[in-house]
Length: 261
Length: 350
Ligand SMILES: Nc1ncnc2c1ncn2[C@@H]1O[C@H](COP(=O)(O)OP(=O)(O)O)[C@@H](O)[C@H]1O
Ligand SMILES: [Mg+2]
Image 1 (cartoon, protein in one colour):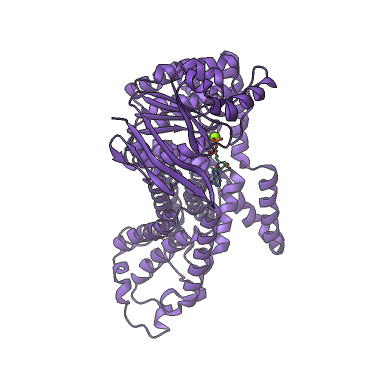
Image 2 (cartoon, chains in turn red, orange; image 1 turned 45 degrees about the vertical axis):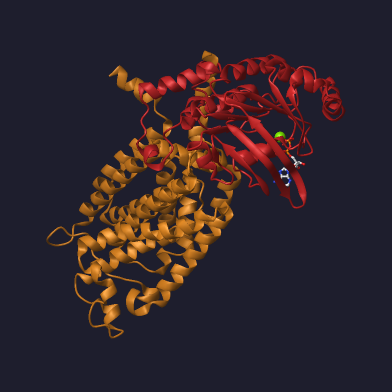
């Protein structure tokens, strides 16, 4: 059975259907990539799964339970869904290590937060997560002083510390150089299997690199779904997305521009 | 010894200032006049009040313009408790009240009365907090609601003549007594100093827990924290209650030092003053609340004798200057300079 089942999901923003009847199944341990032009509804779909936005219709079932409209913190702490937002979203004044420590799972209730102590065991967990994204050396720096790419990795690292069943990553490679994007791809592939991952991406090289199941979103609807090769050949997909995405990349050599909110 | 020196060098600059301030306050009665010692004791009670606001505003980002309600409530409850020890106070007798009203009965027992001076503000914070934080209102709304609370409370105390003394408030409150006569000015000074040190250590512990880090993160990006699985509402509620209790404690100490409490101790003006103290010292590092409170209050006490009529204006200008040119306050600026130096070293080492 799929770990995530989305049925007839729709949301209406004052008459504008940002998500319009989406059905989607994601298997346990799968790495699912969602692509689609800007404004297709990728971020909104993620908002609906993580309870940031309430759907107008439809349901989200996770791990056998209906999670539609739960509290955000419950979605995270109890159900085990972690999320990385589009663009870095870290606590700049705290060190990289403190950011990861804050995300460490199992210490988030009021009482546990009051009496949490940094032990050798928790420090090992934190260090391991930092090492995995290559930020161990910089763990003492304030997160705000890290480079753009490093901030993105720090957020992925916080997700690792959260250790969720499902990780949702919204455009994790935005603003990265080609080399950094490649490294991020490797990192995400390494995390799949252990975690179920949904990642929204803009960068076709990245999608080809992780080569998994792709869902193409367009105007709030699923336009196509399947392997990357099939999707890339699909004439409808070529028409709405791939062409203008490639032409958009021409203008930018090695660094992709931030693709807006 | 070298280990100690190295540890001292690793400390953040405000911890050095803390120690200097503590030593200064500890020896202050040895060279200052009795009058100044008593004034300083009152200011130290204000410092505890400022610390309570720093927890709320400096760390959690909840700017309250009504925090003096908690302070005033502690002062009124503490003041009434003291007054009841000599039977029905004059201001009540004047209105024909012949015995202590039943709803004030718990205050006839000094231990319970003093405990209530701390607990009741906490309860009020809990009630107001549940209302505010459950509806997930924005920061500006928190400002406005607390502001409204301050005016309501001041109006209430002002108009309750026969029970709270109206605009005169409650006067001739004596210093703490342990068995016999009230303690001396110097003894009272050291009681407040110990209370201040204990409050400070409590705050320092609190902000360094994971709970404290979560508070700072609420100020930075509350939604992000919720996505990390924190029920931020509970966190805000607890800090509001703790902060309310600490403010009530400060009010209790203040009333037993200065000897009186009136509606001006719990209104908008007093709330705003606390905001100014914390803003000038710098919020979110505790030391700023201490330094700012002492600095502004001494300046007021010395300067207002000379420029009494312009003092309000002076305070307004000071606040404006800090908001425009020194948002982090005095201590915040010092900390920022140290952090930049450290970061540079760290980056060079990599
Ligand atoms: N809260 C909102 N209110 C109104 N419109 C919104 C809201 N959130 C998103 N939208 C709109 O929904 C569409 C989908 O946006 P989004 O999900 O961010 O797209 P993507 O992430 O694929 O670029 C956009 O047209 C956007 O303007
Ligand atoms: Mg988006």
